[in-house]
Length: 414
Image 1 (tube, rainbow, N blue to C red):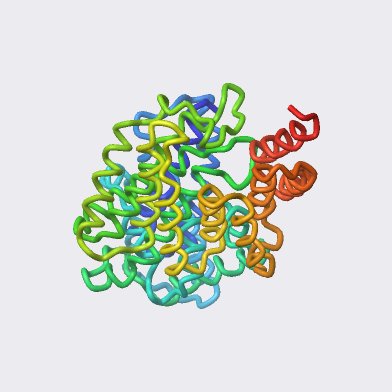
Image 2: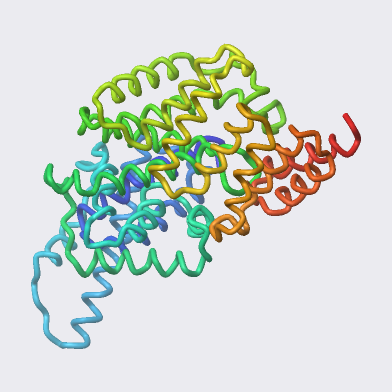
């Protein structure tokens, strides 16, 4: 495959899926057809070259797959019933769909809101959207939610069947319905961005295609709901976090922690846009979790040096965020901020409250944070042990290499 083909396919996949669902209405069958089209592209494009209209090419191939499947289904039904009925759907099949009229229409935002329909549970909606719109594998989604892969596969399958049986129309929801689905939409975009910014597995730290797609969709939602403070807060958070992308890895892809990054590599235009968005959203009076996280990111980004970071303000914002959220990752970050203000022992004391949280039982972050705070406290042996434990638990190669290196440096006294 050419260098740019894989990210292009990932970017186009939700748009093509939206176009096929719009035309044929069957979500599950449409996803299968799109997967076949993507596979065909991976096999043909390296030899034939990139088509002039990659999106239109994929839509046309997926539409043909759907047409073939529907024709086969209708033929089977006719054989079973020996009755031929000329239905509107059959008329559509005989018409041989032409992808040209849809090849420039982006339906991914409609697809996003469709996956967040009230007919689905929140957990199912999030899982389905991460799969259909975000392009994450079932295993990646399972890791993000700390559940077995088989459980997540069943959840996604049930969600597809629910959409099929409920006859959810493929269209943008009304203003009222859109607001009702917004919390799920924003949470899904947040998860997609996080997986792109810090990949949970694999050889690379970042999956730029995912984080870029999340930002694109967040901009689209913000365009539709410009006065919603949490929409603006989420977009700001993404921009302020993504602004550090170039400085997060070294020449060999190794992880560089925030305190050691070359801040001249940070994207100042993205920072300015993010700061403007979060400042405006906070002035509206209604403060939500995404706005608070964006405010924390802005404090980091506006500090000229790591030593200039306003840690007391960050700790205060995390305390407020902790009251709003039951997310143990927020508590982990709060412990780090407290350690930077009151010393590592204060941070370690906060971590003891998380030991009984089942959601963190097998997650590497708790050991990684504990190792960092023990290192700050000068307890080399405990720091080494927890760095090694964290390295053994993560499925991200750059994260594992970083944690292993920290342990080795402490062991050697360098």
